[in-house]
Image (cartoon, rainbow, N blue to C red; front, side, top):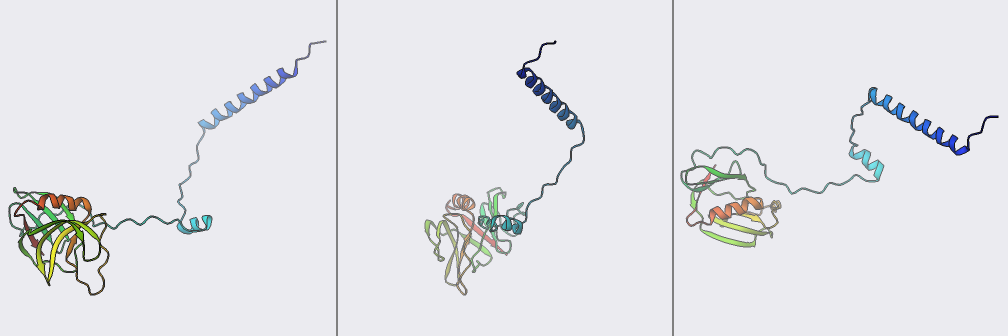
Length: 197
């Protein structure tokens, strides 16, 4: 009578055989075609149904448009100056060789300066704006309708709140980094500001 194999030998043999079969099937599947699925982003309403409420995105601070800067306006004079276009809501910092080292869009107040040439007449490191916002890098250069017109930026870099109905504001605000650059450029004595339409 032949000797019987112990039960552990059977279990080991079956396990090895099953492992070999799984490996063989995996190799065979790897060589075949692979189905692809398009990634589908759930809509806000689908998310709301699945989670009880639609996820809210944090509100981004609105920022003026940043695109390739247009050329310095032709009728803006020559030499080192700040050029402000009322219509484009844009500032250029122009060096002595008539090249713009920096250009950016701004948030103007409800009162705009008249086209012409000015000189930065007063600087103020920080104060509270007429809208109650803490501002810094204030560069005064014109006056109109009894208001002093100045460039500045909010200390937190945010855009100004909408003006109250009927209230006149003369601040020309900009993002913080642009305000810092303008402050560095504009605090040199006798810095000219040219305002164009």
